[in-house]
Image (cartoon, rainbow, N blue to C red; front, side, top):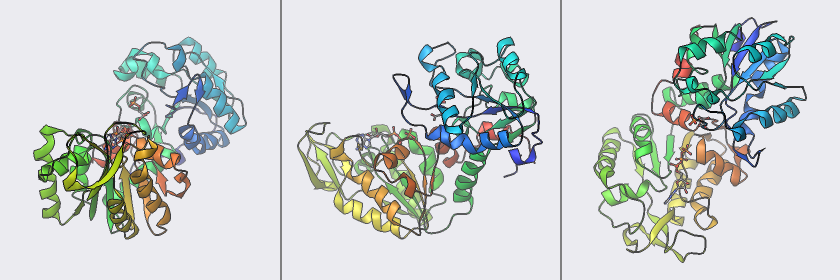
Length: 394
Ligand SMILES: Nc1ncnc2c1ncn2[C@@H]1O[C@H](COP(=O)(O)OP(=O)(O)OP(=O)(O)O)[C@@H](O)[C@H]1O
Ligand SMILES: O=C(O)[C@H](O)COP(=O)(O)O
């Protein structure tokens, strides 16, 4: 990486504004998945060991510039304190006199968590005044919030123009793994793209078609491709206006010598529920009143073989409606193939695929699970991430 990392900074006694992504799912005031908090621990622990005065900042949810009581970071401070086995102070402000007083009261190795930065309208507008106010709290800036690196906000981008700015360990690792995959992949290199809509995956499919040996398609977005091949898809998800694009992707795959895999069979249902009537049909036999909600067993077998023969696999998006048990076999099958394939380096591109491998209890068998949903998708589209661009060059 050509950007500074925390190893390049002199941290002893310095106040460090460290942007993390503590945007964790919450239910009734409790954190339901603390993966992102754990992922930031190496950076926080390093800052503490180096004798920095650690000022953590994060967003939580989308409060749209207003204080939303349920989106305060207080429960996160409590959990972080438990995980670190160390006191974590919490400020109810993220800048201004109260936050400054709290920052100035820190001793070397102390930790303060600021309030949700999205309580301020200037955060998402990347307001220069707010960026300056954040910068005023500290001597240096560390960005470890890979999950928010695709956002040009005051705490992810603006602030980096006012202080020496470096990447934390999580940011560094995410960029390293995804960057290597896209620039110098081990081959055969396979991408598995699923999820609901073609619309959301246009950039990533287009970019990966220039890089991969195999492109596997599953999930709701696959049916627009199957329609483009001339098959009837019943009530399955269809984006009429993307049929031509789907055709052009298949042509691009052919021109680039990329093996393009679509389902050959699917699980169809007469209702969107676990109790629906379901059956497996070949792709040319989807009944008019039924909806395809998962890939079928023959498809799972084929995808498994391709995965097993790959050295590197990037996976983004589920193969079916994995939240319902009746339609989770395809996503589970792909996850298990990755788990079983010892010679395959598996990169899970965040979001629903990360949730799926957690659900199936195979997360620890994956080589890398990205903490970024949108961020990893934009990275895979080949876009520059503003939160990374703004960091100081080496
Ligand atoms: N055949 C299908 N029909 C309808 N919905 C589907 C089908 N296959 C998958 N889905 C749904 O698609 C959703 C996931 O797709 P979505 O594009 O929202 O997320 P993703 O691709 O994992 O990206 P991220 O979570 O990172 O935003 C899941 O909720 C899943 O139930
Ligand atoms: O959950 C995420 O993907 C990140 O925390 C970014 O959140 P956002 O989509 O609300 O900007």
